Structure formats: C-alpha cells, structure tokens
Image (cartoon, helix red, strand yellow):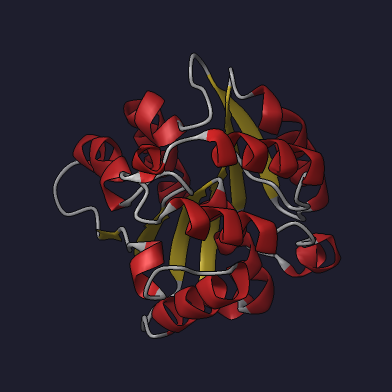
Length: 206
C-alpha cells in the first residue's frame, strides 16, 4: 500500500519533511509536487485531472493523506475512484468551499506583494486563478460513495476548519475526527510528530 502525502496551497512537497522524519525509514510514501504535475498555472479542474492521472498510474490501492487543498483533492479522488483508495486521512478539510472565506483570502492575496508567493510554487496571479476556480466546488453529493475508513484531523487552533471537519466526519460513512493539540492550520508543519503518530496508527488498523 502506497502512502501519498498531498500538500496545501501555500506549501510544497517539503512541507511533509518533518512527518516523514517522524515516520522513520522507508515509510513507502510519496509527496508529489501538485502544481508541478499540471505544469503550473492551474485551475482546479486541471489540477484534479493531473493528480488523477498520477494516482491512477499507481498499481496498488493508496492511503491518501492531504492537507487543506490536498485534502480536497484526496476526497474528490476517493469519490470518483473509490476502488483505488485503501483509506483517507484528511487534515483541515473542506467538502463545500466556504465562498466568503475564499473571497476574504483572495482580497488579502491581492494586497500582498508578488515576492510573498515565492515559496508556494505558483505566482500571485496563478493562486488567485486557482482559488477562484474552486468557489463553486461542492462534494456533498458524492460523500456517501466514500466507503473506505477515514481519519479527519484538524488543528486545535484552526478555527476556520474545525466546524467543517466535524460535519464531514458525520457525513462520511466510516469516519472519525480528532483535534491536534496546539496545532494551527498547517498540522504537517506545526505538529509533524503528532501527525505521523496518527498516520501510523491509522495505517496499522487498515
């Protein structure tokens, strides 16, 4: 079973380094560069299509772990390709995009200088395009098809996503939800050891 770690919007594959270190040698994990898969400058349909091609080429069922944007991709893939999924770990997830929050986020992004986006793998205009393309994304109709075990994690300090995490746990057929003490939105950066421990325990139960 392959473990895929999917980074968030303002992150890259390196955001999982602390988690990989805590998991120990040879965890059988891959951390794809999501924006690199689609050649940069994506909208959401292009990003999802590129990820589906990548994950679909893997021979075995996968354990998908995604943070924020990565969790949306993981959940969307599990709805469309349930036969490929052994389990889901969704960190700071959303299943119906919070339009007001996205608009506020984009307003903040517009005021930020281009150099502030240097570590994201995308330029300012590209990030605005991607987030705008996700405004109407709503995965509720497909949630009942996700019949694999799911662990939903959210940082104790991640006020923007705690409610959605609890709601999603009630909508997925086989999900549990846990808060990660002391962590904010980027649980993989704020609490890598705690996330690795949760991943290891979930993996062992599959």
